[in-house]
Each structure stands twice: as C-alpha cells, then as structure tokens.
Amino acid sequence: MAGLFDTFTIARRGLTVQQGNINTSSHNISNIDTEGYSRQRAVSQTTRPFGGMSRFDTTGAGQVGTGAEITSIQRIRDYFIDYQYRSASGDSGFYTQQNQTLSKVEDIFGEPSDTGIQELTSQFFSAFQEVSKTPDKSDVKTVAIKKAQALADAINYTYNQLEKANQDSQKLLESDVTDVNSYLNQINELNKEIRSVSAVGQTPNDLMDKRDNLVDKLSNKFGINLERKNLDTINLSSTEYPNSAFVKSDPNDLGYSRLSYIDTVTAATDSSGNLTGDVTVKYYPLGNENSTLQTVTIKTGSAADAKSLKDELTQCRILITDKDGKLTMKDSSNKEVEVGDGGTVSASQLTELKTKIFQTYKYDTSSGTAVNNVDNNHVKGYIAANQSVQATIQGYMDNLDRLAAALGYSVNALQVGSLDTANTNLSSSELVFVTYDETNKTTTSTDKGLTAKNIRINEDLLTDTSKLNCNTSSASGEGDGKRANAIANLNTIKMNFSNIAAGTDLSKIDRKTFLTSVGMSGTTGFSDSDCLKLNAGTTGSTVDSYYKSVINNIAVATQEAGRQQDTQEGILSDLQDQRSQVSGVSLDEETTNLIQYQHAYQANAKVISTIDELLDVVINGLKK
Image (cartoon, rainbow, N blue to C red; front, top):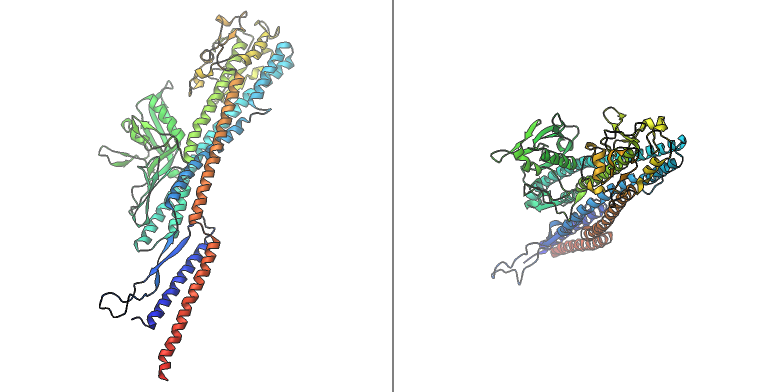
C-alpha cells in the first residue's frame, strides 16, 4: 500500500499543478491587451494510480491515487467563429474601401455647389441669354465667354480628379500586394516554426495566435480558404483562386505562389494606329519597386483580344507569380516553366494566362472555362474593391465625356453654322470650345475628338469678342442676337446620350458623328437662313438633366456602399464580441481563478507540512 513518501509525492505534484495554473493565469493577464491573443488553460489529469493491477494485488480494495499532472496548455479558440469572422471581414473590407473611394468621388463632383458644374452650366446658358438681349455689348459677350471658360475648366478639372482617383485605386493595389506578400511570408515562417514545436509534442499556442492574427488581417484583402493539417500547420489560398496555394504545410517550402504588381500595360499598334494583337506587360516582382521590372509580351491573336486583355490587366494590376515573383506557364509537357524577362506568352496560352491575373471582383470565364471562383453575390476584400471601383469611376468619366461633347459640339455647331467639323459656313465666327493637344501642350483650332479631358475655351474669343457670332446672319458678330439665344436654348434640347455605347472612345469621333448619334440634326447646309434650326428628338435628356442623373447615381451608389459598410461592420462587431467571449481574457475570471489556485497551492503545502510532522513522529518519535 502507499506510504507517507507516496503521499508526499502526491502533494508535490499538486504544488506543480497549481504552480502551472498560476503561471497560465499570469500569462493570460499579461496578454490581456495583446492583439489576437487567445486565453489559455492548463489541462490536468490524474497520474497513474498505485496498485490494483491484478486480483492478487495486496494493496487493498481499489486503487490508490498518485496525484495529478498538467498534460497540456490549451488555447481556447472556436474555429467556426474564426471562419465566420474572416468571411465577414472580407465583406466589410470590400464595402469599407468601396465607400471610401465613392465618397471621394462624390466630393470631387462637389454637388450641390455654387462652383460646381451644374451651377456653372446654368450660368453659361444664362450668360448667353443676356448676350441675346444686348448682342452689341462687348462686356456682356466677355462675361459669356468667361462663363464658357469656367464651365470648360470645371469639366476638365473634375475629369482629371476622377482620373487621379482611378490611379490612386491602382496604387492602392500596389500597397495591397506588398501587404499581402508580407503577411503570407510571416504566416509561412510561423507555419514552419509551429510544425517544429508540434513535432516534439508541445503546443505552440502563442505562435498559433500570431499566425491567426495575420490570417485575420489577410482576410481584409481577399477571401480566405484555410485548411488545417497535421502538426497544427495550415494550407492557405484565396477563395477566388483556390488552386494557387499561398501557404503550404509542406516543410520543404516549395511550390507556393505570391502576388506581383503590374506597372504598365501597352498594346502594340501599326502605322495606322490600329491594334496588332500584342500586349506588353511590365511588372514588379512581389510588388517591390526596388526590383528590376520584368517585361513579358503576350500574343493575343486579335485586336479585340488585345484590347480586352489590356483593359483587364490595367484594371486588375495583379499577377499570381511564384514565390520569387516570376511568371510561370505550362510547357508542352505540362510542366511549370518560368517566363523570364523579355519572354513571350503565346496566343494558345491566353486561357492559362487569365488564371494568373488576380481578378477578385467578379466571376470570370475564358472560352467556357472558369478562370476564378468569385461569388458575385459575396465579393470580398480591399483588393476587389480597388479593382471594381475603377470601372465605376471610369463610368463617371465616360459620363463627363458625353456631357462635354454634347455641350461643346452643339454650341460649336450653332456658332459656326455647321454639323461638319471640317466646314464653317459662317466665316466671321470661330469655335467656342476647342481641344487641347497634350503632346504640344497647346490648344488647337478644332473640336474634333472633344472630350472632358481636352475641352478648352477658344483663346481667340478671349482676345476678340467680336468673333462670338450672335446674329442670324454671318455678316457681323452683332445684330438681332438670335444665334446667342439659340445657344441659350440648348438647355431645353433633349439628346439620346444612351446611343453612345459604353466605352466608346470619343476622342476618335467628330462633331457630326456625335450629334447625329444623340439624335441632333440641322437643315441642309446650315445656311444663314436656317442656321438656328439645330433639331433634336422628343426623347432623351437635356444637358442639365443628364448631369443631374449622373450626380444622383453617384449619391445613390455612395449611400448604398455606406449602408452596406455599416451593416457589415455591425456583423463583424458582433462576431468579434462572440470571439472575445470565447477567447478573450477576463480579469474577473482570472482573479477568481488565482484565488482558487492560491488556496489549492496552500492546501498542498499544508499536506507536505503534515507529512513532515508525521515523518518526524515515525523517524524520531519511535526512538523514545
């Protein structure tokens, strides 16, 4: 049977268990404010009992306990809540970034405002109405020309700011690439450390907390696909591209992917300016601007494919490359080989190349084959937001292009008496709006290819107001003012803006093509007697109502993004509260536990003290 020394051993083990409990609670309290920390508990169990191993055992009835020992330090974590949290984090990241960008776009338009395009358009038409009343006064004409200049400048400025917002979204993608690769590298290293610790029978709780915290941050960027493997390791990929592994449990540290940032995309053209089918991509491996740009030429096979690929690469800006930032493609033997600097991707490899473009904002197929695994109803992450919002901004830029062209072409048509850009029926008149030549950094004398980006006021009118023709006749810039009145009345003419297809490059078309497309026309020749008959249909929108609809669309889109952001943040907050209830450290609970452990420790110490007294009786007392 067990003796006093066995009882002493039980008490000693009890001290060790309680000391471990106290250490664990102390560790919890120390990390109460540590980001991503999960509270821990010492798991103890009884040690192997003494005696009772067979029916002939003489130790007495039953088994005599030998105390307890700590078998592990358990991390309190609910993996299902983690999954829910990361999914909600991806949703929240998408709507948060989208709302921030759309709010910025709304601020760029700045409507309603005393200095916005809407007010300046009203002032422009009002100024020409005043000119129609007193066409012989140069100061009134000067005011009208200045109002035209202010309107052109406002349209041009707004367009440039939208273009900058688009470029900002692309630069944010570069920042996203750098952050993602940093997170992935840290997760990969932690994965290897965790494997090493788990392999010797230990539980690397703090390392797993660090890894999970990084995975949480990564879930803001895109959808997370996480698979738990043996020895507490994980495999990690994106939900959008599950076949491209970012982190692998394989200890050999091979075969995983990283992201690289596309700096420029150009489509080759022939001598006539037509696309040839070749697209050249220059990208920074792993998004590192200090590294050497890698150049890859893609043979698409057709001009249409070249344009489509160029637009996609420009918008997405991210390639899935190997761990060193090199683009790889399968050769004839289905083996992954590197496409080096200056390398070429053939047209037959175009479908495979699509799977290397990290497009996370919409589901995509190529030649009937799925390119990615995006759920269009649940788009996730900052990256998807920065990619998708570019199309939204480009849509507003296209709207401004239509507005500038409609306004500029219709005013110019009345001013010079011709729909045709090449003709001017009124020799004493000059165009009100002209284009700006970016190459030569100067205004031109034509309005061909008029857009929001290049619209300018004709500087000749600023120096000589008589060139602003206000008369019915071409004989003089003065007279009855009917021409100025016709320009003022353009604010009531409806145009079918929807007839201009989305994505149409307005810099490639002229006045007659545009005005005819939107339903405007003039009588034959635009002669002096009928130069004011610039007609339009009964359907469509006026310039003012068209611009108002654009502003309303921006407001609705921003409001919806803000509502979605608030909703997702609420969901994320609730899940964070649930996680905190499971994994968070409670000072009250830890204090209560410390009191319990302290009393248990003292009780075990009392047992040792008692055994000491009993041993004194046995050893020293029996001598007397």
